[in-house]
Length: 295
Length: 295
Ligand SMILES: NC(=O)C1=CN([C@@H]2O[C@H](COP(=O)(O)OP(=O)(O)OC[C@H]3O[C@@H](n4cnc5c(N)ncnc54)[C@H](OP(=O)(O)O)[C@@H]3O)[C@@H](O)[C@H]2O)C=CC1
Ligand SMILES: NC(=O)C1=CN([C@@H]2O[C@H](COP(=O)(O)OP(=O)(O)OC[C@H]3O[C@@H](n4cnc5c(N)ncnc54)[C@H](OP(=O)(O)O)[C@@H]3O)[C@@H](O)[C@H]2O)C=CC1
Figure 1 (cartoon, protein in one colour):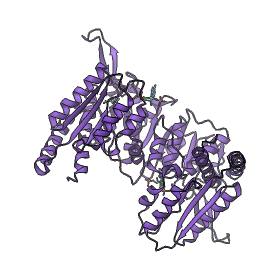
Figure 2 (cartoon, chains in turn purple, green):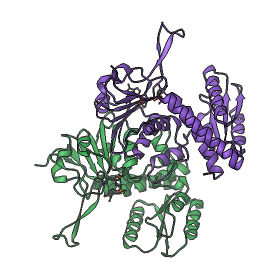
Figure 3 (cartoon, chains in turn blue, green):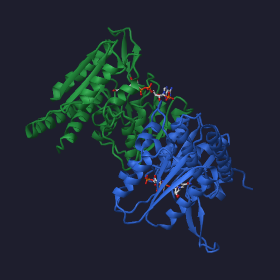
């Protein structure tokens, strides 16, 4: 008796990857250029290695060249900066990702700031965030996860203009840029965070809810306004003895409850998750098109 | 029977100018350096000339050296850029202002972007706005008018953390940075603009209201929650036959009504207005201290 339409991020992401692959083919055939994404991985964290491997596979599947540098845990910041500088200068590289976290002896901000803004496909550079915040300015890249959230709203025909939106969470990589994006599309945005006293009341007024908190099942059915659209960014492991891994992944939103009240909702997994990497591919293509002035 | 405390921006601004003058004296006596502010004025608009004259007088009153370049209306963008570049290189200049609007044959963004970020005492550079938006980053300068609003809240002992705030207006120079500043201080912020459907409802939920719209008396008493604090940035001329000039200035907020319901409110004039220029002096001092590493 769940009434909400399920926003199927997995299938939308597939659709987008197909569109990207077609564009890349068109570019290749018309100007002989293929987009390239470089990833810098320092140390040997298993989870980071997995992420990098997945990005590589996704790149290959759409025809993006992927470049990879793996450096040992005890590399110096200097060495990492050297590789970034080489990628900055390399015209076949259109996007550069530094896989986080870096080893603790490195200054993360220094390293991230070394990526030139034209190749900052993550869109995290302050200059880019500033442009995102400002009227009449255009960011070079929109950060991938929030871009994926908005893209889901667009593809499901959700009106944003004039609607009330609640964004739960204000991190630099998800919540804050998601709020800026909704505002750029003329939503009236309220931003909820850990110091907010009545998150449920504010959320209950929203036509669109984007949650990026990291608290399993925090957003209950009673927080949701009838007919609203819910985008759940959270990916949170909870213990589950029945699962062979001993855990399963849930969102910030109590899906069972919320799906009875919302008009549309993203599942976890299979909602925003697959969109993030699709948007990374999209940003890399945008970068390659821009630098080659390919329309 | 007005019950609200009047937030006296005029007297707070005076207090701040005195503090700034004392700091400048201390710096001069200890390292022999005096802050300098350069203003570039193009064309001969009367209002612009008046603003520039006032800034100059305010600088002199606190001991800031002021430099001025006046260029004819038909100057080229190149010439303006040349002066900005000279000021960028001049170590006795710690802040550079370009008086807007520029003649229509110039590209405003080009000209503003030419001011080096270390001397951008207006705080409007996108890199600066990006840092303002981001957690764990610090802007070099906070834009003057929103900084003045927050300073008034601080000096009147208004708690911000955990409070609900409504910012009406989202311009690059007032509304948007005011919202970012309130959020940095852990308010829960809702941003209202011309596409917002129910501005009065949202405003009525706020403990702190900052209005920067430019619509005389738009915010009625019925929009205000009992006991809230109201900061009215609007400066709007309305016809007034009794006034020798034929008009008088009013805010965005209907003062007569709101002052009966709010716990504290800024008047117009005499509220935020005098704070803006005090914050410009403050930013210039901050710049001179920073570059000379003077604590
Ligand atoms: N789908 C995807 O591809 C991605 C998913 N994620 C997932 O999204 C979630 C958020 O990630 P991220 O933004 O990086 O997390 P952060 O930890 O950086 O930020 C969490 C935000 O939530 C706020 N918050 C924490 N507790 C509460 C609470 N009880 N009530 C209201 N707000 C609260 C914090 O507030 P304050 O600022 O006050 O501390 C903070 O702003 C995680 O589950 C993460 O795994 C993240 C990135 C990509
Ligand atoms: N005290 C001082 O020193 C200063 C005072 N001011 C004064 O502050 C006011 C605002 O200035 P500024 O920010 O530059 O103005 P802008 O015109 O740049 O921005 C006005 C903002 O108000 C919004 N708005 C317009 N009409 C409505 C409405 N009916 N309901 C809700 N929102 C509305 C607009 O929305 P949208 O984005 O959708 O168009 C816009 O975001 C003016 O009166 C100005 O004179 C300004 C600077 C300094």
